[in-house]
Image (tube, rainbow, N blue to C red; front, side):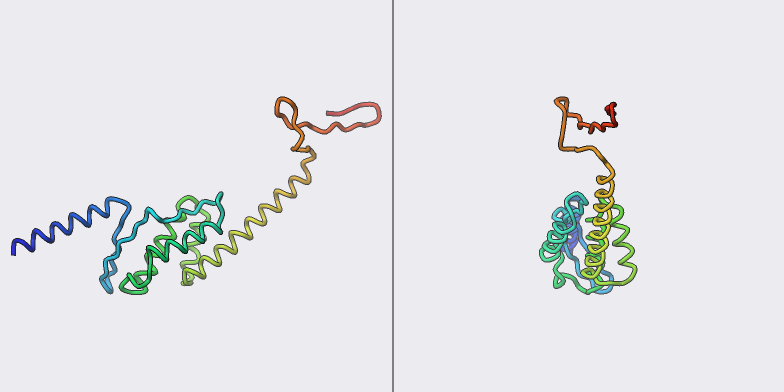
Length: 164
């Protein structure tokens, strides 16, 4: 009997060793199945890099680390996928709030990604159109620079006087 106690303490030491690194264990109460997920491989969403690249990396991460067959139940798998999405959205609060809003509707994770992508790209388009509108009103030619590196302002001539 003492050998079993020492074996269980060795197992708990090894699991705490994994949890202290970038691994974490996921346990479901309904159908207990312990799954180790390497969160170091999780692609973090960065708005500067864009949604398309992150979506491809996220799909690869799900295929490698969050295979449905590894989990005891679909509820356990769904909770882990949601947790992964929240962790991936840690750098962008808007993206995270959109995820939360769609999670509350009860959609599947692929549908959530599709809706968030549509909103993200439409917001990006609106911002791009706003910038283009401002550029139309900005009368300076940003391609012409002085020796000092300043943008050259156009000279407007009114009859006999040049305005700068």
